[in-house]
Image 1 (cartoon, rainbow, N blue to C red):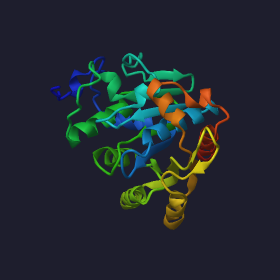
Image 2: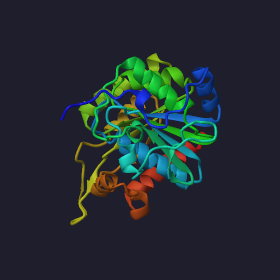
Image 3: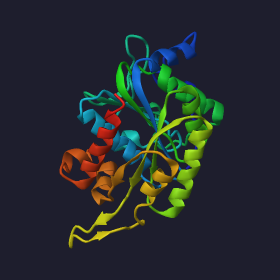
Image 4: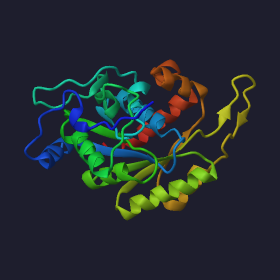
Length: 280
């Protein structure tokens, strides 16, 4: 299939360009108490799943939460939250983020392009402009938390977020295996170089309990995330066990935490949300 270069200017319902986009960004950010960018050193560690479930857990505690998907080349947030359609315009001629619940709304480039299978082929300056628009041209309103789901690595998107949102804090996701932890250390150095505070580290896919015999297995090793956090002097926010139902719920756009309220995974995300609650 031929890939297409999607231009942000062709997005439907795009509001009129503001005379001072920087002022719009600053005005929007001033209404948001806590900005958290979810990062990972490599792909495949479940970063978006952690972003989505952390946002849901915070919203269930009564916090007003926005979820901003800046993984521009692989946006998965709308599918994981079963968000359909495109954002409409507010009375201020800004995009209304798509509503998941009374306390949680989200924006993603996937919701702004006509064909969900089109490739997003953008260079750095266009990405910078798109992320600015996701902040300044979106009607976020008053939020307790803005969760920003970034692509893996230390490229244009997390760099732009660090530059535009000076008080953003990082949540770094890893798995216990050494190859993932080595890449996490690069993310930690990225944050140190840019003087971005690391709020904490989450170890995802941390152990698996067989649903048939109840035996616990360490599929990707054990304890590596906690050890790396201790060595780096950052908070360890908890271990998220591997659960096949997390994958199934993500694929179907249904809430794991609603369907499996008493699971170890739900309890782990509640603990992460409790830790983040200390910011408010």
